[in-house]
Structures are given as structure tokens and as C-alpha cells.
Image (cartoon, rainbow, N blue to C red):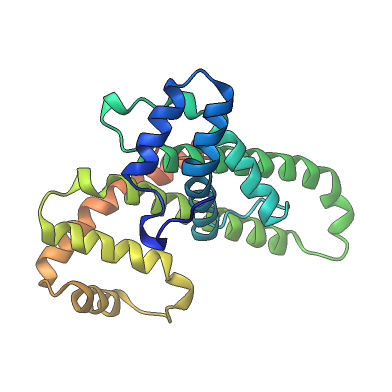
Length: 230
């Protein structure tokens, strides 16, 4: 299996190979195309997405989860149509993310069902408040991960000016690195964004207000349905 450059593991050659794979009827040739031109890219794509967006309700080993996602991509490879203008990398990134989101939500529902049967026994040693806080913290992490996915996919559509796009990416970068940040107040976060982008505060406020509207809408979707549309 030929390895790609780390920054270009899923390039136009991989996209062309997927198109070739979908158009090939000979299974031997299809398997050869997949193993030589597609397998490494799919493997790295799954690995990067799982490592970047760590959902809370997966108990399986990392490699088992990756194999599940990888198998799902292969099973759905025939649905990719390059004539619709979608880049293969973006298309299969969304497919992988949606699979992880759906599986994570299903795991959460199973956990809630299991917990409802065991909480009464646990309450003697653990308070309701502690259980609730733990549950809400996990949900918050999942929501923030989904928000990152949402804006990663939508920034180019939401903003057209280069400064606005840079600000939005800076905001998402802070979301991704939130665990490494200290307790910055609003002024501190604005200063960080200004340092990252070199733009004035008024522009930052404008972009954040747009993102805030989408954030509120997505929060409502998540609270009602357990997921947000990507």
C-alpha cells in the first residue's frame, strides 16, 4: 500500500481512483484499485476524524471504531458522484462524521436506558446531583464537538471575505483547544483572536455575532433531537 505525503494523503489522485473504482465491474481490478490507491487515504481519514472529534459514548477500542467507520465508507463508496461537484475528501469526511454522530447518539440512548435501571441502586452512594453533572458534562462535550464539525463545514458558505473567514477559523481553533486554555474572559478571548488574525475588534464582533446565531439554533436542534444537521 503506497503511503501519501502526510498533508496530501487524500488528494485528487485518490478521488480519481474512487471514480475509477465505482466504474469498474471486475472485482479483481476493483480490489487492486482499492488496496493500492484508496485504502491508505480512507484509513488516515477515519483516524484523523476519530482523533480530532472525541465523542463521549464509545467504549470500543480505537482500532475497532476505526474499522467500523472504514467499513461504512467502503460500503457507501458507490454513492459518491463526482459530477455533482463534491470533492471526495469533503464528501467522505461528512459520511464518516455522520456515522460517528449516529453511533454515538445510539450509544448514548443505550446508556441512558441502562442507567435508568441501575441509578436507584447507585443513589445510596452517589447523589443525583453528581450523576446529573457528569451526564451534562458529557453532553456538553458532544455538543461542542458537533459545533466544531458544523462550522468546519460551513465557514466557507457563511463568510466570503478573507478576514471574516480567518476570524471564524480562529474561533473554531479556540473551541478545539479549549482544554488547554485558562479561564479567559471575553476580553481575553478577543485579544487572542486579534493576535491570531491581526484584525480589528469590530470585525471580530461582526463574525462572532453571525456564529452566535447559528450556535443558538444548533443548540436548540441538539437539545430537541440529540444531533445537529451538518
